[in-house]
Image (tube, rainbow, N blue to C red; front, side):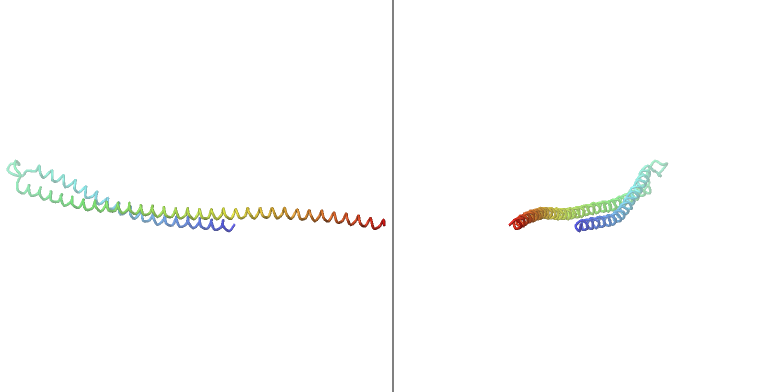
Length: 186
């Protein structure tokens, strides 16, 4: 009975510990997801800005404000160059923010691998504990069976001893009566 209580206590502890660990993991996962999502939104915003800038650049290439609208002026070319420069700077920001996004993703992957390793270690430890308790339980059952067999053999011996005493008592009583009957006839 005592081993059963210990086993139940250990299982309760293990499940409680696992659920609190899972709750902490859930909070961390939500925080990581929010960081990842905000970073992803930053990259998408930069990509949208790039698309808009590229549209401006294409329009500036088509624009000709020179004589009768046939030629490009120096101002038109400078405006196209400025838009192109802004495009390149935006592209650099996109690369930087994308690298941050990939780093977040790599950190998440690494953390999940660590969590998987921790869970695996916990499960292995739980399995070892359960195996140890099962072995102890089996050992106690064998002891109980052995003691029950000993009790059974002791009970059998006791019955034989009682039977022997009863048989001897009957024999003694019959001998006593026989002798008493012989003494009366003499």
